[in-house]
Picture 1 (tube, rainbow, N blue to C red):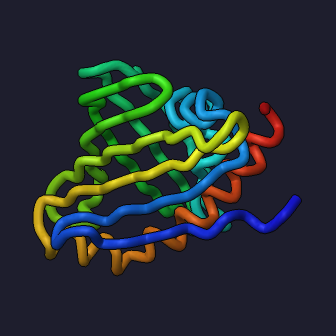
Picture 2 (tube, one colour):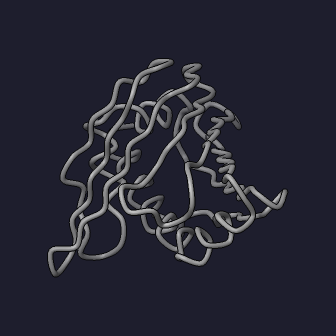
Length: 162
């Protein structure tokens, strides 16, 4: 297995963070891994010592999802979201909020799955925060460091189920 592709992170506006990452898998498979709760639970664990204890979702417009993580020393993190748009296998738009406000307000997440050939998919995730302050607070949490770890887990999962 080669090193995982680089995570590209930009701030295209005062309220946005854009994350781009390419995966060696078919677009349909990457989309499934993003939307099927049993698959989400296998890769979105987070940093060392954390695991997903709940992964539920109804991937349709108006459907909701719930993720809960547990970590060392009884640490807990939960997030709830609502799907606004689902266009398999190319696009998801959702609104999410963490139980413990890591940043003010909700965030709208637009995730696009771009086929770069038969077995390569680029995921472009744009997170729109309610304010520049909220975006800056979210970035300061080290969120992209966590994405690097979880996307490496997704690489392994995609290789396994592909």
